[in-house]
Image 1: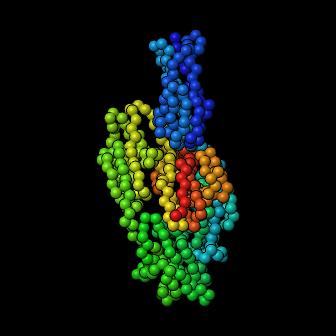
Image 2 (image 1 turned 60 degrees about the vertical axis):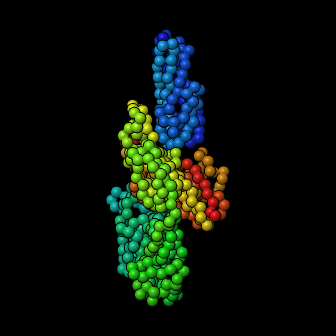
Image 3 (image 1 turned 90 degrees about the vertical axis):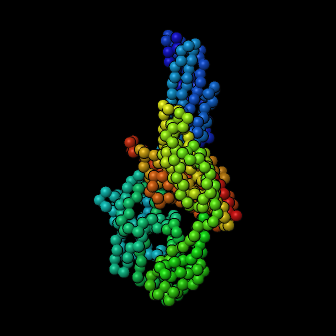
Length: 446
């Protein structure tokens, strides 16, 4: 009689889109090979599908699933299962770090320093060094006469990431940050900061520079109103002089109002299925019942990709989108892993906007998340589009939230560009570091 079956697949880790075939060896109690019928199944076809008859596996999206073979000879049935993982791989062992100190104009500031606490590895200012991925740094920017610390700036995005003189972070793929100081010796500072914290323009007014022109900002989904500094309001293109700012350092912040454009949000599988029309950046919260038609809640899909394992899921409107809840039969195991997706591409005149969304379930910690960009079509494949491709543009998210959306804008782009998000995370129980990549999207400016 049929005694046991052994299921095998020639690999346990898959790239998205990759395929393989499962096979079974079934033995009777006397160790003879049994003549059996086999039915294959996947615990989650949204992650990996399998042909029930021939065992052909196709990797659909990042995650981990159980592949099961149900083997029958006459009236005896046995099962065997194996786990396969799609799109999650070991993260790079080391990441780069460079720490700098400068004034708003990018000039070196003398007499100041950046120091680490007792647990922070040693480092040198303005030297690009390597450290193991996940290493934590806690650094403090010191001050000197006439040189006052203002903020930490990420050099890749030119965004302000912290206004505290002490900043804590972990090593990801590449970190380049600068302690920015106001240098009284350089003149009167005029700075323009966009709504996302990006520093658009910094100038010192002095004997050689008596005026500066206010730059034209842009923020997707918003209409620019004016540059504002307290009660002072100026237009884009307006000249700013020492008289304009009252002979004092001045920070202008971009003031916007939301665009009137509406986007359709289709919601299904929730407590309240509906289609709503909302403006850009408006919050949406959906709630799934504990069970539906005898099945238990598994996760939310947005535009067909996993975005949350929480029955209560919130996000911000980016474009037209569909959100649907997925349910599984009671007793079916789920294997939640961190996920990241690319959203709809938004093209505009001379620019393209990209967005990504990540979710990190319990048992994992965020290390780094970002978006890669290339105009090389040959690299825009699941096999090749990763952190190692040459000449890629990379933007790193500064949010430390486990579940978050991340948007970036690239200006003055020519031709078609391809974007892919990545997420480096820690498996807290194992202490290991992994990386997962999103789907690939492309777009061109109008």
